[in-house]
Image (cartoon, rainbow, N blue to C red; front, side, top):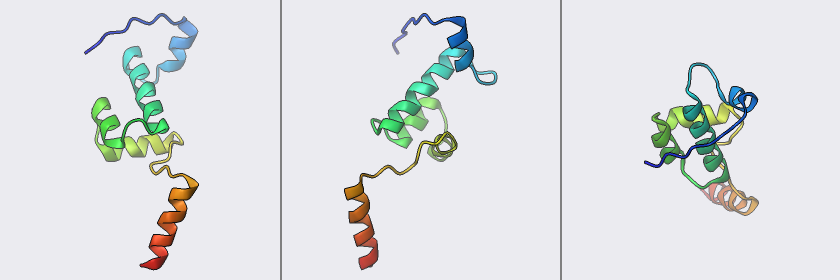
Length: 86
């Protein structure tokens, strides 16, 4: 495990805190959510890092507006054609 000291203003820190989570836990969650949103990590890996189930993580991400399925237009078209052929 690597520890990274980060200095932020009190205002910034206050925005990160939600509920009774610690500031480091809130910061890690935001970083994991962003990596998932970018498609850098899977929902399973993100859930593992946050200590939750994949289903719970995807549900949480979806409530925050991060879609569980992210496809390019070409991928969507290919999937649509495949589904229509079945």
